Length: 279
Ligand SMILES: [Zn+2]
Image 1 (tube, rainbow, N blue to C red):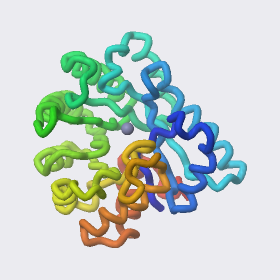
Image 2: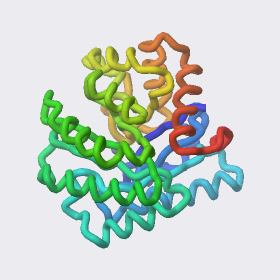
Image 3: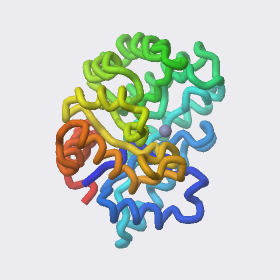
Image 4: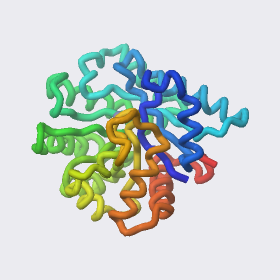
């Protein structure tokens, strides 16, 4: 079984064919998808959970679908909307059994948007809420161009405020260097690789991936963005995680089956899920 650890299933780009798209994922061997609950802002944070319940219900009635779980969080550039109401909504969502992770949260200094101090404050408030609900976190981190500025700030926050929780998390759509990967593993995080691993210019990232231990990796689509390999530029979907897993297998000198089992086992261990949850 393959697990897509990160997909924005609530994207409007799936409105016309969401069930067919999920059936394709299941047929491609994807047994579980984590549906990311950031929407276009906190007002839409609940959409991932709604989808999760809807499709898990159809699955119970016999539809050939992957098992879904959800996350909830306020994206770095939406922290301008992280008022008390939004944070209370996040807390309530994280109390739901299907909402197994808080994210994607973090720091993004690459795109213009929320000021850095506001991103950091929003991240810290969400760490407090996630810790109280005992939910691992999904981190989005991107520095200014080639700089590690956002990562340096992120590690300062996580070392002080997240390491003591022992809850760990996921570095989603990892794109930084070995130093950041090593520090993430040291913090008890899993490092998740997306379709950009397959791009011709991503040799530096493949070199980082080649040094990863099998018990520290995940694969994801970040769908509908970042379609891998030959599908680049098209709408991405969870079935395409197969392609990223294949490239990761090549890089690590493992078989695609070994990558599927390792990444699934890592995901289930991080979130304390039963081994048979996606069967
Ligand atoms: Zn994402």
